[in-house]
Amino acid sequence: MTLRYQHFITPHGTVEFPKVVRGEGVYIWDSTGRRLLDGSSGAISVNVGHAHPRVLDAMRDQMGKIIYAHSMRWDNDPNERLAARLERMSDWGYGAAFFVSGGSEANEAAIKLARQVAVSRGQDSRYKIVSRIPSYHGATTALLGITGDPDYAAAYRPMFVDMPKVDVPMIYRRPAGETAEDVVDRCLSQLEDTILREGPETVLAFMIEPVGGVSTGALVSPASYSTRVRQVCDRYGVMLIYDEIMSGAGRTGKFLAGHHWPDCRPDIVTLAKGVSGSYAPLGAVLASADMVSDVRRAGGFKHGHTYSANPVSCAASDMVLRVVEDDGLMARATSLGAIIKARLEAMKGRSTIIGDVRGLGLHMAVEIVADNSSKEPFPAAMRAAERIGMLCRDHGLLLFSRRTAGGSFGEWLMICPPLTINEAEIEEMLTSFEAGLHEFEREAAGTALKATA
Ligand SMILES: Cc1ncc(COP(=O)(O)O)c(C=O)c1O
Picture 1 (cartoon, rainbow, N blue to C red):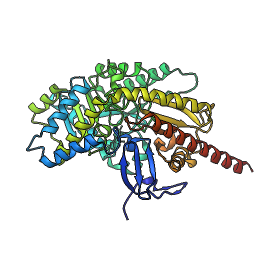
Picture 2 (cartoon, protein in one colour):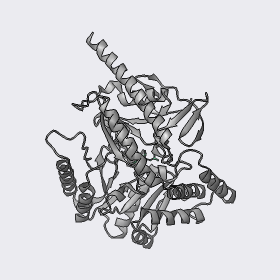
Picture 3 (cartoon, rainbow, N blue to C red):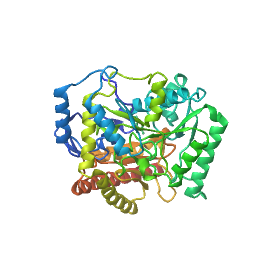
Picture 4 (cartoon, helix red, strand yellow):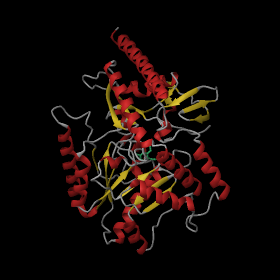
């Protein structure tokens, strides 16, 4: 028996996972020959679709040259090429890149880099990472203390240090009477109060997803938020870390989601998922060369993994990003994202259970509610978004659903197809989505009738 995910047994029954056999473009085929449209790009990561010939060729080419050489002893061309490409595409003067095998490893490396920079600058007292709730920053033990999802972390609580948390500006679920700017004011005051309460000399960094991932359902904060976050961080010498593991690599229509608000430059950026399009495990930590020089002078970065800067992963990622640039996929994310958003908004007019449609580019989510006039969520036991995901699958569409912190912030489905999706495939995706949604509406109405009978 293989140990698998927690959702294996759901209130809707035991989910037998289909066996995946093949992928091409936006489609995946299972072992029965069934074709499914990958509407959430795997884990919002298969950015250039499956089996892209240029990426496969680049990987084969690299595998024929060298598949592995330890990064503590060797440098390699794909590593250098990718670092240079990321420096250019991220456009904020990140002259140093450190490559690992995924998102959690990237965030671990980022907080350790921040700590070593502080120590190398004589700021040994700084070690706390302030983060937000809800959020997701990874599954390792240290990151459980930073990830803002008490349910997810509960079983491991004695094993990690719980770091200070502040609220995410959840605009859709703001208290009655508050404007979006009021929410920003409240969140920023809370951030400043938290830094002051903890003691600014102990606070190392503030880690955020600049555009929310699955944990907030593609939350986009008002434009003033990031500018003011940067000001608060600067006031207290706190580093700002952008977790762009899901939002980065072009998905929102710009290379970094943070580029939508260019006057806020984070000190460190982490990338994973879409940066290698999921062709090979890869995560990246970007920082400015002067930060890394300080660490080098103090004896070097005391951190690493067997697969750091793996040449095959770096070659895959370098080609994925070339495809993103050569095929204009960021502009495509913006234009196709606008089409999908308009269609989802229209769908909202035909459904009482779409509460909110949000996101940027092809990074979108639909929040599901029992009644969109009151924003009342469905009872937790119904696991509504998950159920809609299952019904969509019956209609040939794969979608990622989420209820962070046991649903206390709502629930949603991520609409994040590969950036290579075409208009006919968008039509198919939205038709299947609406079919799954309406089927759930009928099911939910039936449940309500039974409950009142
Ligand atoms: C925003 C964000 N940070 C970190 C992670 C962790 O990445 P990984 O699953 O590759 O460890 C994820 C994964 O979903 C994520 O969405």
